[in-house]
Image (cartoon, rainbow, N blue to C red):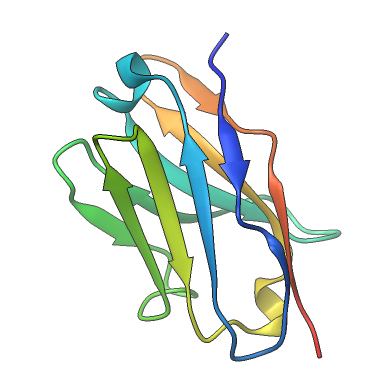
Length: 114
């Protein structure tokens, strides 16, 4: 069973920032693509961003230029820095690891509201 420790969600006003964190085991972190999905109420889960083992990144068009994904190999942690947040970014954000199998975190709530 792969464990994830997610943190950083919360309530923020439009235009604000949050940073999500997701820590997992070194054996997974060193060899798997890491990323984030999100799911808004009443909507399907949506891919947000990923980062490869070598550090290459990719983003959904809806967050490009506002969100930045990064990884700290010394802490086995992936981050999602979210700037210029909009109400439509409100969702539960899920960390995932993609490799020989796919693993998911439990999710962290992000609410963007005035």
